[in-house]
Image (cartoon, rainbow, N blue to C red; front, side):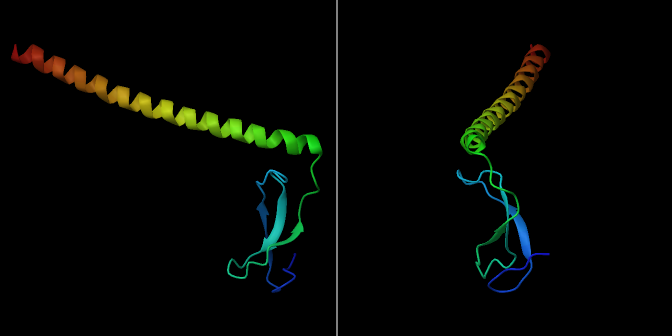
Length: 96
């Protein structure tokens, strides 16, 4: 169990997503109000190549997830319009 150097509370493990430490876990103070910062690193440092590649991969993944969400919303919208058009077509046939 790791404790905070400043306030003595139990430290929790969080993940860094900064460009210099992408995906690297660290211990930090569990008290949000205290703002003691990083207590110690949980993971060893990554190699330089990983630090260069991971942010680009994360950006690509986020972009693809955004595009997939847009396509899913577009598919829902198209499905609604298809249902409405079939209802109108059915009403046209019935009232003709």
